[in-house]
Length: 88
Image (cartoon, rainbow, N blue to C red; front, side, top):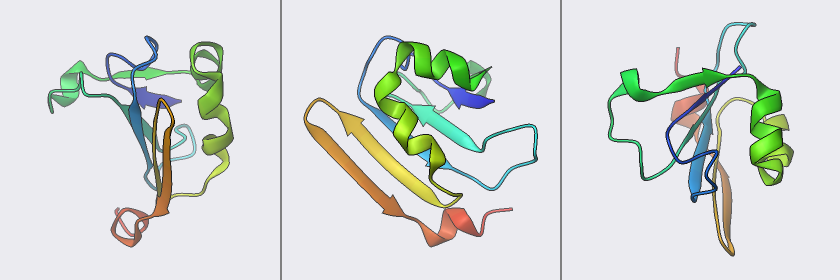
């Protein structure tokens, strides 16, 4: 399961962050500029839906907890965030 904001399925540039999580969740949160900070606006969806609508994101889903990525247009950036990796 993956947490997403509005705009992910629509192909907007996005930021992904993978938090340590329980086994039933992947830990991935994918947000776009459409996300207003209100966590009640986020949706939990199955990984297969992400691959269907955003196949270019699939390669990042294997990254372990603590990783972040930004993806949009010609822009791609991937990095490790120690603070996220240690988040409980």
